[in-house]
Amino acid sequence: MSTGLTALLHPSPTEWFLKLNPNGRIPTLVDGRRNDFAVFESGAILLYLAEHYDHEHKLLSEDPNLRSQAIQWVMWQMGGLGPMMGQANHFYRYAPEKIPYGIKRYQDESTRLLQVLERQLSDGREYLVGDYSIADIACFGWVACYSYAGLSLETCPNLEKWLHRVGARPAVRKGTNVPTPSTLIDDGFKIKEERAQQVAATAQKWINDQKEKEEAK
Image 1 (tube, one colour):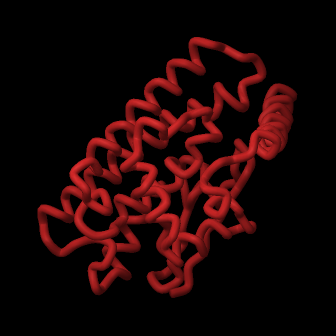
Image 2 (cartoon, one colour):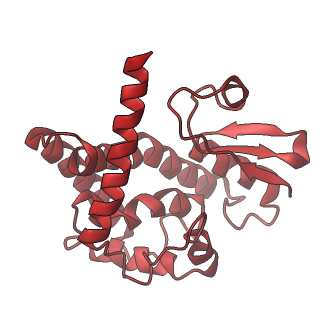
């Protein structure tokens, strides 16, 4: 399969990228096997790949109920876990000034959502819906970075086991090293504070630079 993930790190994308993704953000996938068909939004990309390339239904079950449940969790991640943890990251790490209300608001909501996952896994199941699926793939990246947002999994033992279980899968380990090598899994999903501050400082500089460019227009 000839595919490409096109990333653009500028808040005012060029026209060629907007034709692929009207929202002008990553991720965007271009499928070279299907006349360069473009797909944007992570959940839509997971569904697209499952529908067109998961012929053995390893990641999205043929069973209509399991299929529906997996899609429900993907939508839940896109509408809840991702946006809330993204805001928790912003107020905790990136905001130019510390706003206690914003930090607490989004950390509390992110914690609630992590507990939703904990409850789903509390019956002893290994994965969110039946076998490993796009539901697990959609949620893994956000849960894996819980410590970066100042969160804890102390009250989520089943979720922590799930996190390490998914992280031990060879394809997941391979994926976490794209586009650059990562020690996140080997470090037990504990992001060292010094490293977190370095990442945050780089992101803050980029945010401020882009804001100045926009204001100068």
